[in-house]
Length: 97
Image 1 (spheres, rainbow, N blue to C red):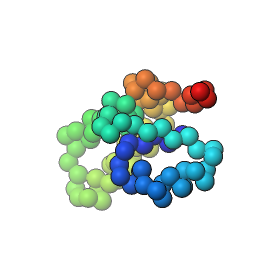
Image 2: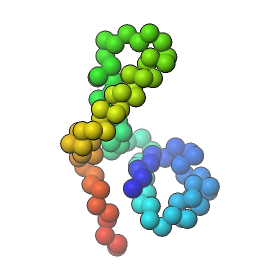
Image 3: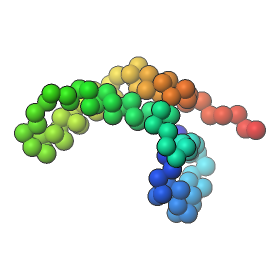
């Protein structure tokens, strides 16, 4: 399942062709501006909260801190489920209409 906003590269003819070539892929498109429907926003909010008051020694150190925090997030499936639940969406595909 792929959840996308309406970034211009996401709605291009090339992307439509790539998606059409993958019948196993379910794509959910979000409205143009809908951060409350995007579970990634919850991830970034959680990420920033964990980096608050952290003094990185440089860009490489900051990148390592971010990677470490993302790995910690991946290990917490209940946290990830919460990000999705906060949007009101589920991982169950919609029945055909």
